[in-house]
Image (cartoon, rainbow, N blue to C red):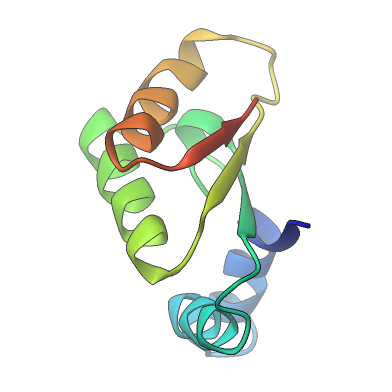
Length: 101
């Protein structure tokens, strides 16, 4: 069983309105549910925001999300442009994460 626990809206609300570190919440959830895979919804090249990020930012974000406890990364692109999924797919594969496209 996989639980989706993190994504763009979570990241946005925690940083903008709650003044919390979304990465810390992910680390705590992973510690408490170490045997359950945790899933993140990633907005393709937009990562967790609302504008396209350069490839280096996407790769670093995915690496850090995996280090914090994301096991499965579910991807979508709001404008249905598969080119916006290429870099995140590669980054997820490089950190041995599971991809749900």
